[in-house]
Length: 284
Image 1: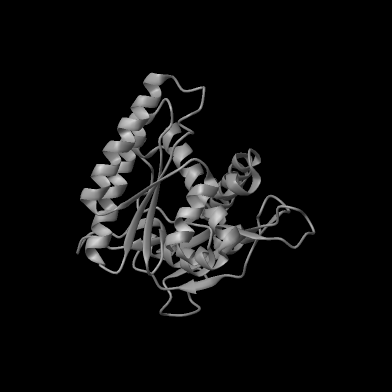
Image 2: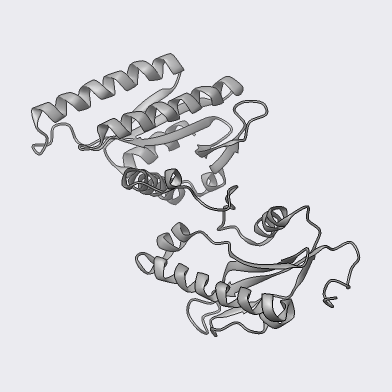
């Protein structure tokens, strides 16, 4: 029997957090993954999101994430062959090291990973599914929308640091269903962000309509909330827009305005990140 398992009778799992020091000797450290032992099996998982690393390190973020994955794969191989303690001592790169081993009691591996994330990983969101399907893969349009939303939240945080705690909060919209995450959820306001791009207006309309429906459910659930749908659009008097494209923008904005009124959602248009942040700060 592994000596770790015999330490406490109630513990049925053990784990150790993998820490990365991006710049040697700087003292800056990120919790990036974990080695877990549950029910006699071993697993090494990356628990920091790749998009977080991209936001922190730009184009180098992808390479950093691949380095973390490679390190964890090597560690998992050692654990399966030689055990938990040996794997903790076999970290292949000097910039990585493990914390002390922790005991845990979990119902299954997913429950164990969720506990680890809650305890040690503020920069992680644990997926409910083990692998992403093709439908879940981010499209270019979705990536652009995510970047737009991230920039708005950064602009809000710069001016109202107290609102940071209101980012990415969840709300149950229908009893018995999973909670839905909103970019901004304060005691007074629930907000979503959309984007109408010149050559992707159909996708932007579909996205905005889906988000307004969620906002409608949120305010129906909590009457003290006001709802705001902030949609980014280009300057409509720009000389780069053809008359046909400009007319389509005007029609789509008109449609969204009428639909927002039906859903009792406040529709705001913004020509810049600063404009969008202003809308939220004004209402929050």
